[in-house]
Each structure stands twice: as structure tokens, then as C-alpha cells.
Image (cartoon, rainbow, N blue to C red; front, side, top):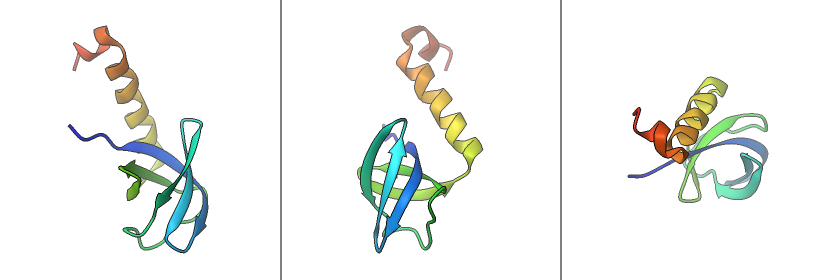
Length: 77
């Protein structure tokens, strides 16, 4: 199973972006996306920003990840 992590874009340079994923800041490749601005949300997988997402998507992804971290919650899926 592949998991993408939602992250908020903090800074953008040519083909990279500094993102914040639940407090962890990292630089990721933004080469797959046409245009990013600070404040945008992206889905990150394997060091790549693979898609722009909405704030609602970010909250939903965080909820799913929390459920997966809780062994009893994962049974509900």
C-alpha cells in the first residue's frame, strides 16, 4: 500500500517546495505540478508533491491516518 501525506506549502523555488507535514518540514520535488504558491496544500509521496489538494482533503487524510494509527480504529475500516 502506498501512502501519501498531506502537507502545506511554505515556500516554493524553481522545482522544489518546502512543506510542513504535521509539524515536520521537508523539501520535496514540485516538478510534477504546474504552479504552487505558499499556503497551497499538496499530497506528498516518496519526496514528490504529486497533487494539489484542498484543505478539506487534508483534514480527511489526517483523520484516516489517525484511524490507521489506532489498532481498534483500523478495524472500523
